[in-house]
Length: 167
Image 1 (cartoon, rainbow, N blue to C red):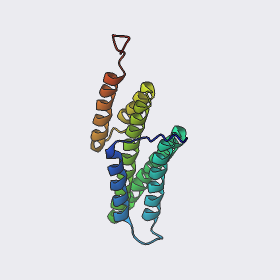
Image 2 (cartoon, one colour; image 1 turned 45 degrees about the vertical axis):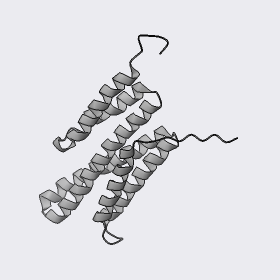
Image 3 (cartoon, rainbow, N blue to C red; image 1 turned 135 degrees about the vertical axis):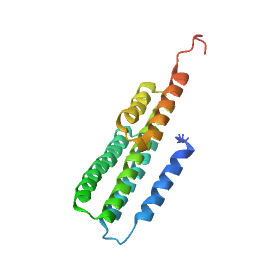
């Protein structure tokens, strides 16, 4: 007899991945375009992140998300350098990809928190949500901080010890 366990991720995750994919397609140009290559690498990291979560390989999922964050940091450095040199078009594309990388990483940390909540690991879920609150401090990232803060409050509701030991 085979036993299948299916991890259901919230519906919004699939929309986030689809939105990310659409954005990456919009950035696409020729095959040798460095922006497209980075967008493709980022897309691979996103797909790997969710694949690892579905397979319960949390450490590998975290590594994929850290790679997305690293890409965002590298792009931020590139944006700063190019802004000093001029070339507004290049800066705009690099900034858009950097912003997408940061937003994707924040969404992934929230997804990881939800994964831990589903797995009845509230301390790990809290740490993941807190990571978003502490790391994503740009004004444009307030949506992710607020979502993580709400998730922390919700986690307190579902993980609070029941006063009646029979529940």
